[in-house]
Image 1 (cartoon, rainbow, N blue to C red):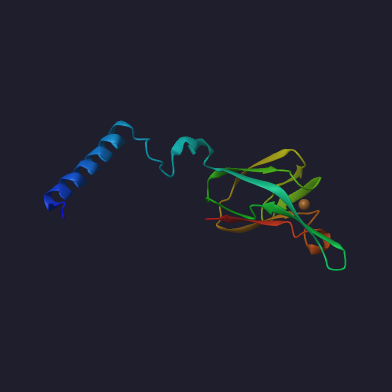
Image 2: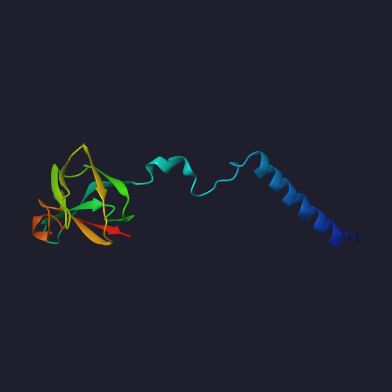
Length: 149
Ligand SMILES: [Cu+2]
């Protein structure tokens, strides 16, 4: 029976070699490993995107229920920074809206992008409310939440 004898020193040398190889790869090609937070999109840091969406379903007695939504339903934005909110109309013909506690308002139309420039000076949660679909009796609630932090 033959045994392969592995000396502790070999393991250490092998480990050190691997570390050295990894370091030289990173030194010569710093983008070789995927890194979170690659800042190529820095200019877009304060642009927030939403779309208008729709849920629909049939009830047991054959009725239809539907609800329009902002998607994502919540965004977190920085306080005191100018941000852009871009909303693309996908579902629903038209969504007139306002942001509670501000004078921001507008309309999102199907196939069009509505872009607002906003700056919140106070922390808090602001509701983005579609006046055509504000609650369940009007195919809503189409209410989004803008958390200013
Ligand atoms: Cu709406």
